[in-house]
Amino acid sequence: MTAILHGNIIHAPQFGTLEMIPNGYLVLEDGVLAECCAALPQRYAGLPVTDYGNALIMPSFADLHLHAPQYPMLGMGMDLPLLEWLDAYTFRTEARFADLDYARRVYRQLAQDLISSGTTRVSAFASRHTDAALVLMEELERAGVAGYVGKVNMDRNAGPSQEETGESVAETLRWLENCRFELVKPILTPRFTPSCSDRLMEELGKIARERDLPVQSHLSENTGEIAWVRELHPGCGQYWETYDQYGLWKERTLMAHCVHSDAREQEAMVRAGVWAVHCAASNVNLCSGTAPVRELLENGVQVALGSDIAGGDQLAMNRVAVMSIRASKLKSMETGKPFLTVPEAYYLSSTAGHLYFGGGAGFQAGHKLHAVVVDDSAMPEPARELTLAERFERCIYLMEKRHIKAVYSEGVNRI
Ligand code: GUN
Ligand code: FE
Image (tube, rainbow, N blue to C red):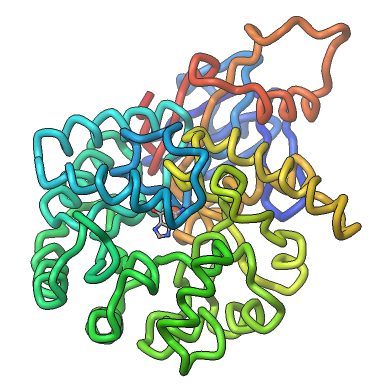
């Protein structure tokens, strides 16, 4: 079936460049983008057009690091540093997800809030509970959010959320057997080195290899955490090696934060094809630091953005993009390196994440449509007529759910 959308088209096919087609058209064949063009080709004349008028049509957002069971504690415990915050709030909140009715309610709301904020792809941490992780996958799929979910593994230093090692492995296998979803796939998720024993890491590495599964975790977020990892693994020169020695440091591994990753750790990321997920709001909230995003990019590390709720307090990825700009401006005042521009931050919050999942670079033909339609007419009346680029910038800074008129995910209109 052919579908045609009309509006002001904006996308970021490459890092740092915006391409704009005022009054343009997107043509879909069975949800797959066939044309992104300024004038509708003759062969489509006469077909019905979904006309979004003066609204902006742009690729949707991708959130490559969020903790779904921390949604109930959004905006709480923000005066504590990471390790104290984990003990005081996080492990206790996540323990509640043994209750599947509770999990269903929270995850349904989260999935709805994601899609209606324009986030159509995610890589999410669930809690340690197998059945609740499956509920999260079901709810994301139902809402039309694609990507990865991981049942979290943690067999030490995890308070009321801790598992036995054998149980953690057996439950991971049971979870994998029950992952039968179309849009949402499994990703192995050792929480971080301090909460996973060597034996657990080794078993997860084996599963990753045997089943060719991707991996996500945390890396070099906070100085206290890094010192703890050094104590736990005196044989490893750097934090990343604690993952590498068990086969968890590999192509497409997602490592959240990398705030304190030095040149050597960054080089190891490039060599292995490991991605850094930058979570600026969380890094400031938990006083972790300001990540060297420009340096990571210059050194060739692949970078995408994450909300890291509830370390981050904002689910909407345009807000996360803005926070990454602010953090990079602070970093820039310290290092003299250029800060992230709006098109650059948008690329990292959208294109980069879609590319991670094998999607298109912006509105690239041959890929299922992931798009958000924004009506900026209710934003403050400007002093003069704005260019399309100015309207886009304002949308990144000011966009709220109420401005989002439509969301397409995997080629289907979900809102
Ligand atoms: N490191 C280990 N677990 C977590 C978590 O839940 N949030 C953040 N920000 N860092 C972590
Ligand atoms: Fe995190």
